[in-house]
Image 1: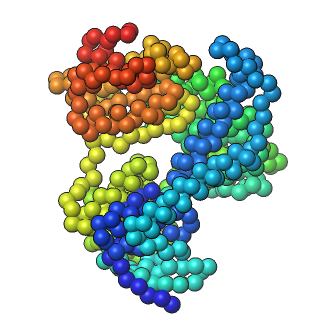
Image 2: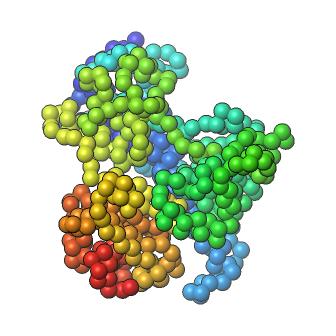
Image 3: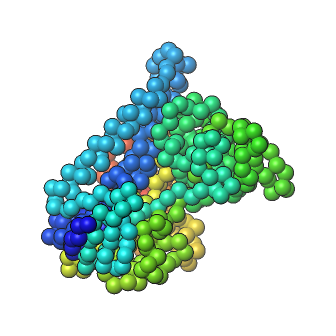
Length: 468
């Protein structure tokens, strides 16, 4: 058995882990990244990237079907079809290019990648396992845990149940065929993103949510636009129902309402998307006896754990479970280890939901500002008054700004509409730079763009919107 030593061990090759390894190597820190599966983690392989690829393919197919019935802009096609195997192959090609690129960046910057499953022996020692056998042992000065998260299973309806009918987002992103009837358990962003994609691919989709509204993490002004779009698309939404499991025949999902009345939703596949949890089991983490915050590792504003020189970033450190948060944390930890002074105190972390229409939330909502006791002003500009939205045949939705009443410092942005995910950069910058309403209102925005709605929202908050 081989034994080696290094300054930094990173466990996990997802966005947080590989960014930490790259930045540490750039700073001259001897770094070993231990990767059990593929570089890129959940995000690149079975999450962010492949889901957006499938969403795009579904949208293009749905657009072709729309044009087959004629359209107001004069485009007509006939009898469109989709080769789902080719779609999945195209998606896999994108994933391969990105993961190969990550490997090249790690090598270029001098970070060593060790394939195998990490097993923590103590805060300074990690064994690397392959096929259940220890193949190497590595000692370190610093240990960074970036093990990510896993989908939450329902104990009464585990993944693979019903002869493979019950699937997670992993299987949903690599379909061999489009099911005739799909039941989605969970009305959060993962369930709705994939449910909408499958509806556009031709499946009959029913979404089951135990709460009284979809996307409960977002405020209702935003989600009601998505709810209307779901109805127009033909997605059934069942709210206030709890899932009981599969029926005896295995061809339907049993659900129960508040009055304990049971009914069934027929299905060929069931996508369970009820959330994710930190990956803390199976690699010896418990041996460190770290302080925990529920299921997540407890960290401070430098991503330090309760054990000296043991760090944790990304999903394993709890909410928000977002790739861009993990990346920022990974970069910071590498710089702290290199002797730089850093703290993780972002003004905001954008949250984007790639439904149709898309949702973006950055900073405080009006409700959050009120709960914090901040006197604030808010204004909304509808895309119905935006020229670019009209040319995109999508005028649903709006941009909303929240600012302090006294000095007009911007506290938050929210948007719902086609393509608004791209506005998250402008929103984040305005908060990080401490912009006021006057700063945004006085900035010349390109015409015609969706971004004009950002300026118009700020103008409206100041009392002099120009296009509404």
